[in-house]
Image (cartoon, rainbow, N blue to C red; front, side, top):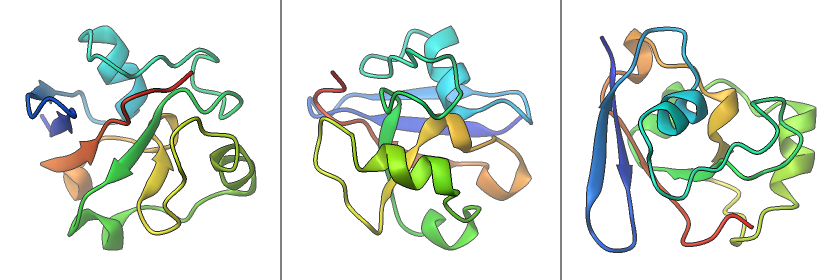
Length: 108
């Protein structure tokens, strides 16, 4: 089972075991991770699941799709062109086992 670490401004991480094929957003919502809202339910339509992906995971992520790219321009926290992703578009699996993301201080 893949593990995802959600880092918060407070320095406290949430470490969550995630079923393969589950989005990082759905996993965060199910486990009560602070700062991940997922208002649209994972349709890449709200940007309330914005995260900053940490190195070295950037090289194994799928490409940013057109809808995700557009929504990343609407995030409350500043977009980082290298690290910003919508966690609803990232699926847990062997390639992302151990992935670490920073949760912005605000999503809305």
